[in-house]
Image (cartoon, rainbow, N blue to C red; front, side):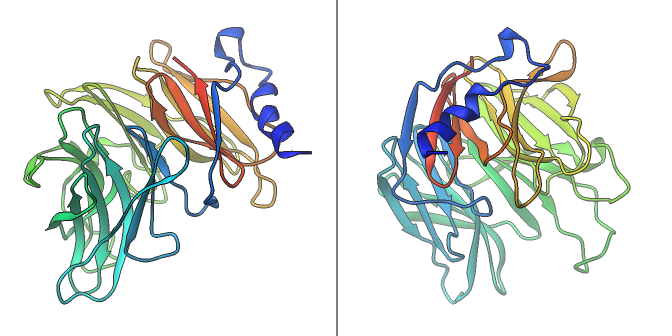
Length: 312
């Protein structure tokens, strides 16, 4: 199958359970990146830019524009620290950036980056590890993470919140969502690990893969707006991406296939019914949601192709 035929197949093969209202239209836009990303090193889309970090492992963070062209490259450096591993990245509507990571002998940190690409400040957050970052419209930074247990490897951990909000100058403003508020399963995995953080207007969303739950909070008051069970699945079901559109629709991408034969599917949250409605899916091939661009989903298909899909 040709590359163009494969891309069309991603959207043309519908789930038998989907209704007409749950079908994606044709992609509104398609871009082929000069740089490819495999499924172990996925970028994310935020505020008009494609963000990447640690590919290959290291201390460099990149951003690409809407045409897939390099926009900015920043090297994160900490005095007297030689080994740095980056973990996630974010960019605001005004061009300010943030990168999280860990430094040997120094611990977890968040670096704030100017629109010109210069590191403005580095804030040490240890023992709190920062897994996902996202900017709100007011340039505050939201962080999904966890308080690491001590000693390392122990199951004992202090009570803590998994969601943090930082000011533009790197000050911790507040913490939300207690770790103990999430369902616990037999494997005891932390709800923030491998989770997703999505932001739209005054709404912050956390999709916990391990707790199998999606939670929304008000960015203004911190009030929990709702909690819903995650996507149900049997066998190998792996959530690969999430997005919250400008109009408030929530989508996730899921891989139901085997490592050698990925099978992508997409779901939309029906808040009133409390269920995830399936939308168009592909029977084979790799595709996942990288984020939302207004009311379009930005989807990565194959190694380096991006699709803008109207979603509402």
